[in-house]
Amino acid sequence: MNSRRKRQMHLFAMPMGSGGHLAGWRLSGSGAEKLMTLEYWKEIAQLSEAGCFDALFIADSQGFRIIEGADAFCQTDAVRLDPVTLLAALSACTRHLGLVATMSTSYNEPYIAARRLATLDHLSGGRAAWNVVTSTSENEAHNFGRDVHFGHAERYERASEFVDVVKALWDGWDDDAFEYDRQGARFFNPDKVHGLYYKGDHFSVAGPLTLGRPPQGHPVIVQAGASSAGLDLAARTADAVFTSHPKLESAIAFYADLKARVVAAGRPADSLKIMCAIQPVAAASKSEAEAEVADLNALIPDNLAMGYLQMSIGGVDLSAHDPDGPLPNLPASNASQATRQRIIDMSEKQGMSIRQIARKMAESRTSHALAGTPGMIADQMQEWFEKGAADGFVIAPPALPMMLRSFVELVVPELQSRGLLRVSYEGDTLRDRLGLQRPVNRYEVDPSLHQEPEIWHP
Image 1: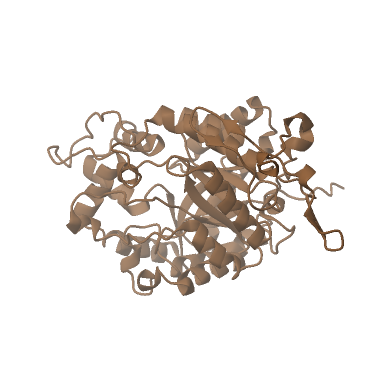
Image 2: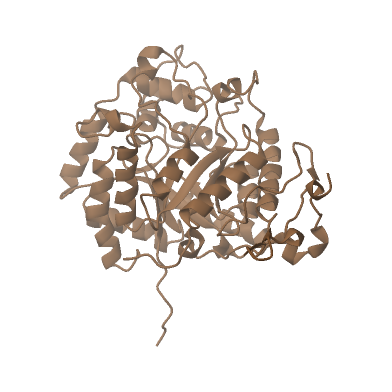
């Protein structure tokens, strides 16, 4: 008899403000009025934990992604709270849920990121994760003293160096460095603290951090870039990748490609989890679910849909083109390369008009929309999971909190009854629950890397 445990899928909840749908906030019962309150986010986090989700994933941008025209932009739920501050508060409201904070490598410094994430990992008892992004918004650049955003290649060169420095900083204290010897008057062992003294193309960092090694060794690293540079970075450094695909076939191809890159980078294929984004609407019948989606879609004005499309392709003005005609050739852009390519594919491979693409993007953002009974949604998730398209899913309900509650109450029990999802939490940390190894300290692997902190000898 084979006693090996059946493989189970992982789930992240991704609350995009008051929902993953641009008009989700307009539904009665949405959290629109409470977006800036702890009460709202506590409800989202505790619903996710009740559904045995691995983690809560907070997306972010440090500046508005501008939808041209105030009349269009004001139709969105524009509120975005600081992820680390929010998740630190939620760590006190939850016991098991992982906490994924988005932080940009373009508009941050490694020391600050390493310190904030290590703090979150300690406060949460080993549940922190970092969603590594390079940013895509020119407006974000304008908030950090730059006239233009970094170019794509430079962004990823900087990101690669940034992640390496952060990991090295996390290793700056040995796990057993703190002695708390009251009688001997020694709080920590100075021989187990390591200076970094890194000088690279983009950063110069001395170290060490002002707190001990995180409980997980390294907080879990998540990444979402889908360009070749982004995939190579993920294959080398990430523990999980967030992705989106409209079709099973493209998801399978992406999964196989990225897993091959992971192996080529010298890592086991299972050391990186691939998480596909979906936007589920569950109801008692398929017709009821489809009616809910239709009602939501009817709430998106055309000018908002068109503005969102133009923002997604880097601010290209489409007003001179027939909205019922094809998408024109797009100039090079610093916007998300994966989103840009998905939009081009809608035009070239699916024959969609500008108006149709705009509606599609506005209705599901970048997530794969599913509507049906709990069994139907579970069927599709199971198919993708078992056919090698995903190790799990990022759940982005169209409207919150009600559609997350529907997923937890209707779809989660269906997945659990099939043995596809845990029924309770095991392990102490997010790494444990994702089946990831705790990284060995770099100074244990190679003691010659040790440098005594210069602060010992001012």
